[in-house]
Length: 237
Image (tube, rainbow, N blue to C red; front, side, top):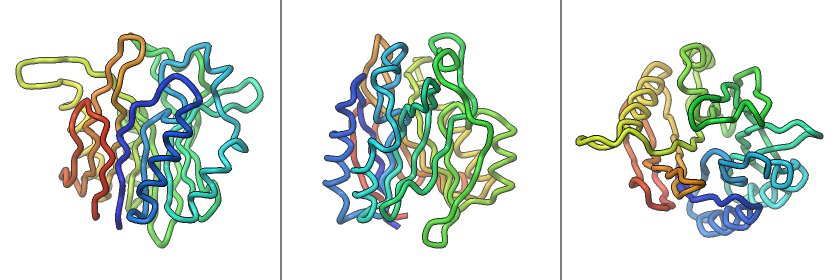
């Protein structure tokens, strides 16, 4: 299976959709699945811009159309009336096949997601071409009960969309990177799955995002993108 990690730098506007489409167009003949970061259609620090920039599902028809050529996973702020949700969307075969609403919304330090989003309440798996897939969004991965849910579902792939700011610089590197790799390797090993981790890069309101997107196979990192640099790369898994 050919998997493209799209380590992009979303902006705080709706122009992200056109960039996502351009990236998909560039790899649709050479990849089976492309995965973008958390809130890749929206930008992360939306705050009150959420009311202007969140998406309705019916505005994403172009992604449905493109998914006849390649499976697509994107992160988006979706609106349903006056309710907003941080969502991972899986498009395949011309349809929105599955969506996962982020359950665990961080609301501490630099994070204010619970102030703006309504959280989900479940974790699910679905099948594509005989492979079972589960999706998570960022903070979801940090909770032990989520690991238990994933182990119970026994997926082949765990797709994890992330918007992780860089923090914890030290002599040996980046502390948050070490913590993330430890937890995703643990989850991949526990669930005997291939875990696709896609983190964004770029800056928003003084926050820098570190990237380092990777693929983990049964606890081992088998493919990895650089830190801090926008990168689109396809790997055979």
